[in-house]
Amino acid sequence: MAFALHINMERCTGCNACVVACPVDALELYTVDPVTNEKIYQVKNGKAAVLDVDHELCAGCGVCVEACPFDVIRLAGPWEKGSKPLAKGME
Image 1 (cartoon, one colour):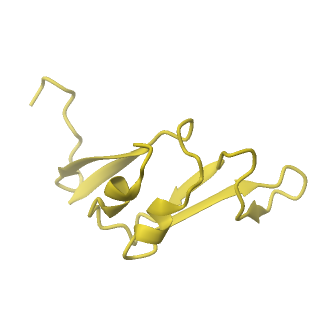
Image 2: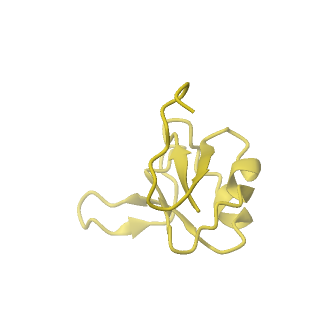
């Protein structure tokens, strides 16, 4: 089954609750150093820049969605692999 994680980084505070809650370690939260382009595992100015999802590990269980206190992550799907989701109202 395929699914999608919709992540609103404008609302993310970098609290790390989703990363800690993930049972398969599929999430990585970091900022990027503008000079070296390296990952920095600290939040700057109360914001995280990147929430990476390892789609090979992620099972779509939704634990990260439930753990997020700021409603940053939404889970959509599941769909059969290879098929496209239908637009809302086209089901």
